[in-house]
Image 1 (cartoon, rainbow, N blue to C red):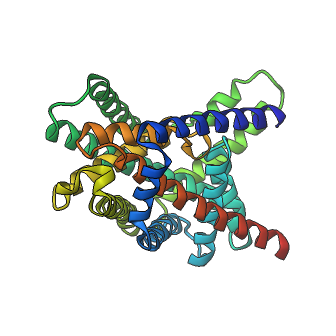
Image 2 (image 1 turned 90 degrees about the horizontal axis):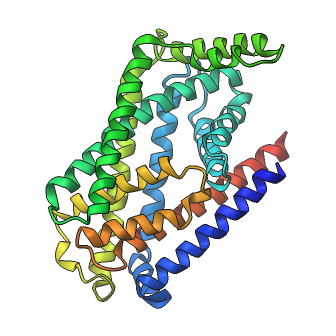
Length: 333
């Protein structure tokens, strides 16, 4: 744990340094402050949209549980687990078991975790499709892209295509991957642990195929999640480019074309979430990548950075809510 804490601290320090460097490169703190001020009370809308996104992931998870569980409890579990995943370098290894544990008062934690794993599988497929849409939109809309960005876009397409291919294979073959690896480990308890893992894998695959699974509801919820995410990115970009033209110099982008820019920035954020999950809150990395892409697609200096910072502040707010939910749970127990 001390090694993990050291890694967490080191990554956070590097992230802060990268963030400070990017702020200075984008015109300094005064310029960024003007950009954040352009969002103003609109941040309340950002919080509402992000709350609805949490709600949609909770609905998708609940649709695969196969047992009654209060939506409010699933929502609280989603928010609190997401807080742990964002604030620590453990990522999904911290957030997903925490969500299942949080819901344990209403449902067997193993069953909750299996349904959550199945929901994450479908969510990963939807993210891959969403990222492909954003990358293709960028490549087709903007011909004069930096070589590094174009190469990164192609790499993202290859990665997401691989995710879809592997997901299709898993759905078709339902392999015993984790239990198979554990069974080959050179210690005596491996066989028993592999058997328990195989039971969990069977539960996970069964979460999407039992008669009470509501796959249509799950698919609609995952789709709504991405629509809400795009709406959030578009809304913030609208405020930044319209209310801070002195910072951005891109107010002419307000209108239908801004939706493409929002899709691109949102897609880049998803790629960063996947590639840098070990960095707490993707500190620094998200801001640099968002600013680089924003400049490349003509938003001007500062726009991408401000969008990423608004996203970071929103994440901090919900992380605080998640920690409060954990505190309430421990006090009640």
